[in-house]
Image (cartoon, rainbow over all chains, first blue to last red; front, side):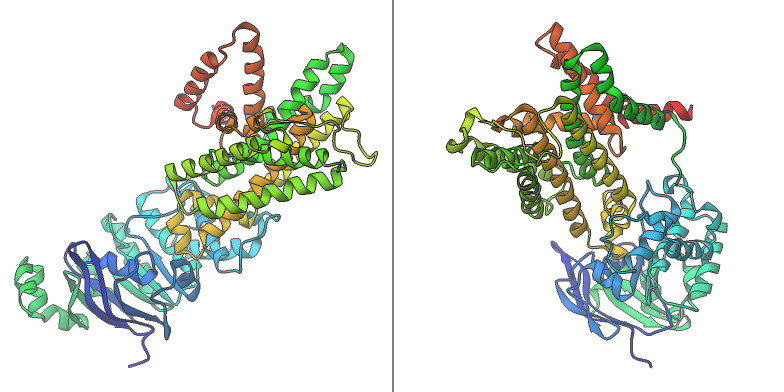
Amino acid sequence: MAEPLLRVDNLVRRYGGITATDNLSMEVVPGELHAIIGPNGAGKTTLISQLTGQVMPNSGTIYFAGRDVTSLPSYKRSRLGLARSFQITSLLKDFSAIDNVALAAQAHDGHSFRFWGNARKERQLREVARAALERVGLGKRADIVVSQLSHGEQRELELAVALATKPQLLLLDEPMAGLGVTESARMVALLKELRKEVTIVLVEHDMEAVFALADRITVLVYGRVIACGVPDAIRKDEEVKRAYLGEQHAVTRHD
Amino acid sequence: MMPKLNASNAVAALLCIALVLLPVYSAITGNIFILTLFTRIAIYALAAASLNLIMGYGGMMSFGHAAYLGIGGYAVGILAAEGIGSGFIQWPVALAVSALFALLIGALSLRTRGVYFIMITLAFAQMAYYVASALSRYGGDDGLTVYKRSDFAGLINLSDRTQFYYLCLGCLFGGLYLIWRIVNSRFGLVVQGVRSNEQRMQAIGFHANRYRLVCFVIAGTICGLAGALLANNTDFVSPAVMYWTRSGDLMVMVILGGMGSLFGPVVGAIVYLLLEELLSQFTEYSGLILGPVLLLIVLFARGGIMGLLGRMSRG
């Protein structure tokens, strides 16, 4: 197996008495689409937030591209090529779609202590932004203010923003959340395209999508990895079945 | 983007023309009072515009912005009292000290958000107020008279009413142009992005606080310039210009005119100071009228007067 792009060693994060991430270790190899699934409250979003640096772990180590990034703030990780989309859409609501994406491109084009020139007229930033919007199918909606976009379009915009940072690793936190059937299908088609270019970690509840897309799947229950493998193996795994049949107590008790 | 012809832009343009022509009107009618009143308005408009940069565009609710009026003013006053009358020294010092003060309190207060940020900026401004009150060598509580206005080696005579008015107006227009450039620059977009969604900006790779701090310093420096003008205008500087109610006045001007609108603070300063002036002729409780006006604006016209005009022109 190739050198992992992302490696997590013995990660622990507690909130009061609750252990949201419980001695978790995993690896993501370059080029794969690695899905993370698990019942509600399994600590999936907490894990993603630790990977991107919004939440700091109590202990454990995170390596990204061979480098220990555990204590790096999120803006520095983003510069290293780690991008995320948010489960609950998190955009600049009062900015236009293209401004959202252009800012992401700007963030990766040196510092932004430029006080004079009109940033909206910088062709190179606008072109990167426009390309990312085209990519996700929002080319015609570039000048619309985010708050006027539909929920589905906002989800696509989340992706465009992440893409504009030219990531090595894309962490997608439930990109299908709240999407209708046709919108979901569009998103799956889009992810199928994107996975050819960038390594993806996908957190998703939509099992159909996960099994259609993933190279490997990690299953979390109560902050712990209970299984990790190719989709077929996961489908057959007894422990996973139990977790998804609602017998989570059995899973947590036995170890 | 080309400025579009709508009600708010038309008002802004007419306002600029009226302000430029005001001394002509004053000379023809012999109405000197209006010229001195609008000199004061121009200075406060500059201060309010600088507050708008951090409050409207940056989302930083500073409740201590009047501190820079005092700092800029005292820099001029103290240097004048010590025999340094040249504006070429006084004004750069006023700007530098204001910038330094902004850097100091910004570095500390920007660690907090929301109500705590409001309180900490208020606290710093009150500290500046008490420090000034304790400067017994420079008048303490009673303030400091500036016997001679800043001297610019004959380039411009600040004691000439018309020249001084145009200087203030020039500083106001210059300040607005600077803010306009900043707001649309890479830097300005980052600052506005952080106002809109800080977490998102961090996630795409911006160190949010660094940009907020620089913005805070720019705003403080511009307001320091307004302070230097104000000391020359009143020939006097006292701790009272830094009192928290003065910071409140500046906030009211910004909100009244329209937060996050370039000309909003100018409109706000004009309306606020004119109303204050007019009402003071009928009653000493001008706040009784001003208060409800502000209440109505906040309740029914979130974007202030400029926002209202914008909505009217959109129909």
